Image (cartoon, rainbow, N blue to C red):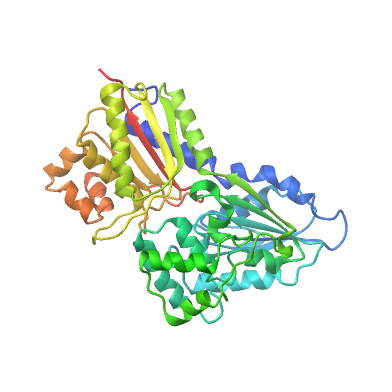
Length: 434
């Protein structure tokens, strides 16, 4: 149908281009010469590399491979299990995601210990990417790891947005919400960020360990009330007393901090759009920060796709509708799912086998939900094939069983760990009207 072969192949090539655009080996090296210039030409100054996130190990490797400065490199980063890569000078620690574990807690404590003795001639290069909130797990004094794990479980199932979840995390952490940068003072801090959050807000990427936070404990308590989150007495005390207040943007200890976005969802969507153009398909980027319930977003996108397919409005065919962001899933069923397959299954039900419409939705880190599956592909005949197997699509959706649904059809997208993360990727390909 296109210069790139089948619809499925084209969609997969677009997803691959989006992921490739955010690979640390491509997007990080151009920023290193500016970091090197911050170090004194001679003297005791050194570069300490720290970080957290699903891409942090690959980012550390990119620093080692392309570092232009004379100063020696050392440091420690923590990444998700299975996302580590070998490094020579930076220690790599693997820990759990999305629920934090003891390995992440120990790594976070060690990172804080490493930065405490630094002086004004030293530079901290902080490598931050999506997933860092769970991986950099160091609770406030008086709060346990078990408290954080229980809270994370509730938040992940509540339907709260990532911004709301990270607001709570910032106020219950000894290292997030600017506290890590404050601990680095008086050293200079340069943070290189790979964004996985809608709006690319630095305070929400790994809950902002090196940036000031304008939100308050009162804001965190409002989120608790909004979603009916149950807090143990010690956690509630930290918020109500103000003991969990984060470091604010005007804090003098942050004066030597600098933050740079090196990869974003928008950049990834633009890379995918180039692949579509090369195949003779017009791309339309609908947004890089779309939020809301995954199944509701699926219904809206289905309505837009139907209007395009049937009436050529607001876009002519062939075209592809691209979007990113981070939807949420309020878990009510007992199936196996993630926000991307939830979106795709809702889209499928709403389209009801509409001819000429294909779609792919996947997480750019290669993990949708808690499964080692990136997402899935949807074809016009997906619902018919499901019915032939005795699978009731609406029942699968009600049970939050998106992975089960698409696995049964052989349409799961399995990429393995991509070693980066610029959030969700959604593409709806609409073939020429006949």
